[in-house]
Image (tube, rainbow, N blue to C red; front, side, top):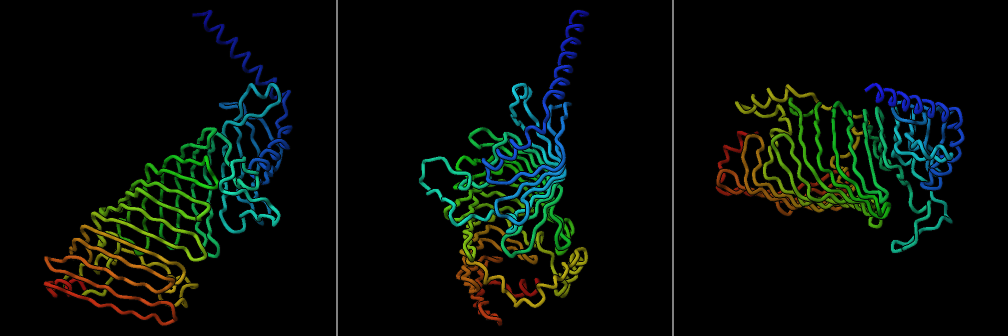
Length: 418
């Protein structure tokens, strides 16, 4: 036992001496230019490191840096800014002055996905055809994640599409790992606070970026979320689920398949896709085995009688959403002009304002402000309810035209709901 402890102590002393000698003999700042050139060659992004690089030997041999930023070519703002960056490196390659990074960790990072952080392609930049079998040039590949492991903690993500409002995700924690073929797994959690509403979300899954940027697929194996705040039920809305997502660069299309989600006691399945043209083109095919709108949308105080009192009691437990000044002068239904949609919805059971509907089917299209509801029907207490119609929001004054039809339905049931 004494011999074993002696041997162990000798090995420990040798290890400490070796690391000490390494720290004295190898200057981490010698790798600064190498890292900047490698990032530029592999991704086209410009890496900037402020302050000196220094060693950190326990519990993992690492290189620590101060503030860092990552900026796309021609962008006016950096894509990533971080207060600290840690590079976990392999020991043996350092003995021959080679840098092998096993993991990158960012803390206090601000990630901006906005028009100001996008790369500006020069007019004479080469563009590889889709069926090109040659390796992509750095300008063709766009961003490339060539590190086997990435960890982001206590960070912020700012997302903005063109002139839309910015969405900020805080308290981000991200862990990503991948193999040399760019197939890997990830875990993510974050929190969004907007318009007096608080959304907490966490998810994990796998991603295949072997054909990025032409094609990117991901399988969300588990997603958990909770939404609380203004204009929501007192208990909030929470749920979980899974789905698959795919981005096709050639068509600018984002697809969601094998959707399986819950929201309180409601369930959702189906598929959806959006093509990001000048006006986004949506296509939805969704099924609801159970849809309880009373548990998702708080009732207002306009109802009368006994049912109205119950609704008033529920509405008092919710906060009203704030009025955004930029939205005050917007014409009604103006948002319909910004996209097109083809929607098909089916629900086995729907509860709305205390009424229980069955076999609900909806088919509608939106053509840049012209909403046509060709089918909106369901069964109520053995009778049939149908409400097809149109909503024309292509002008300042919307025009609404519906043709309600009731067959064998007690009118008192509907009156009590309002």
